[in-house]
Each structure stands twice: as C-alpha cells, then as structure tokens.
Amino acid sequence: GENVEQHPSTLSVQEGDSAVIKCTYSDSASNYFPWYKQELGKGPQLIIDIRSNVGEKKDQRIAVTLNKTAKHFSLHITETQPEDSAVYFCAASKGSNYQLIWGAGTKLIIKP
Amino acid sequence: SQTIHQWPATLVQPVGSPLSLECTVEGTSNPNLYWYRQAAGRGLQLLFYSVGIGQISSEVPQNLSASRPQDRQFILSSKKLLLSDSGFYLCAWSVLGYGYTFGSGTRLTVV
Image (cartoon, rainbow over all chains, first blue to last red; front, side, top):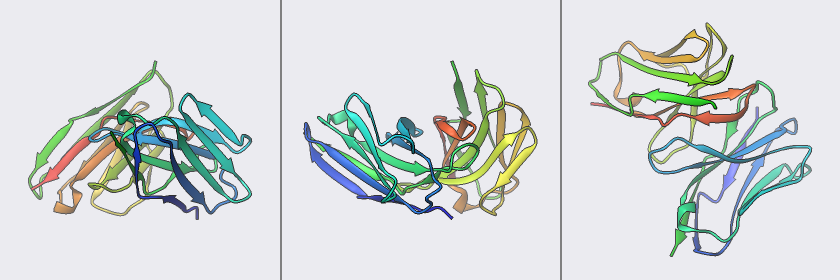
C-alpha cells in the first residue's frame, strides 16, 4: 500500500527566512497531495493542496511543488512569521473516495 | 458555508466507563466522514470512515465503534474505556475524499 515519508521531523528557522518540508510517496497512482497545519490543541487545517496534473501551486507565502517522476512533493513557506509555528502534515491519496495516507508531521519553529 | 461541530472539547473518564463522542456537519450533503485519533506529539491515526448512512469501515481493530445514524452525524463509542484510549479525537469530513475539514477535537483522558 501507499507509504508517505515526511522530513524533517523538526525544523527551526529564523523569522523572515524560508522553510521547506519534503514528503515522498510510494504509490505512483497517487494524484492528490494536501498539506495541513495543526496549531497546538486544534484540529489540522488545510493550507494548500495540489493534484498531479499540476507541478506547482502558490498561495501568497505558501507554495507546493510536485515531482511525479521522483514521487516527492514539498511545502515552501517564504518570509516566515511567528504565527507559522505549528506542526505541518503532508498526505497523499489516489483521489476520489480513497483515504488520505499521512506523513508523520514536521514541527516548525520560527525563532524571533 | 460548511461547518463541523465536535463535542465535548475535553473529557475525563474512568477506566471501564462508556464513551460517546458526537460530530455533526452542516452545509453539505452526503459527506465522507472520518474519526481520527492522535496521541500526544504524534501523527494522525484513522479509526473509522463512512461514505454513507449506515456504512462504516474500520481501520484499526479495538474496543471502539462508530455509527452514522444520519447523513451528517457521526458518533464514536466505546462500551468500556481502556487507559490506552486516551488521546485527541478528531472528526473530519470531505467531499469524495478531497479537502478534508477537521473539527476542533476532543481531548480524552482515561483515568
């Protein structure tokens, strides 16, 4: 079955710098890749997603890139701010009515 | 707009007691519904999912059960809680498996 690996488990960056979190997946049939942000004590919140017919998607300071050949996708956060501190989860699925397979999460720490 | 309600936010229950957590969704029809559990500092473990009324799929064999008595209502239950049932329980919904939206979660502590 599908397996999603996420790295690093913890990432500490200086405020204003960029942060990159990477995920790899094993099932080449996967075609949907969302990213979630979970703040302490809250449920995860979808921040951006990408489908396999697109190589990159941007939303303000957040971007996701997808390399289908290498089977990996990455979350890029530019100009990091203190409110970006949270745990970020990647996931992958084969699309309609398939379950999301989750990465283990990355704790992002923004240092002032 | 769609909203998801999950309650209670916090629950402390003794070992061996029953459990009932409820989740309701508004503003959408025939959503896919999910129950997840998250141990402290850990990832998301799918417990149950449902693609329609009365249809429940279990991912992890355990002493928990789920029911979907109405289209937009999902209930997580246990007859007798174990210490290992402690955790953060999250309900979520999606449209055909895309764009999961999570509830605010229930912090369950079994003592």
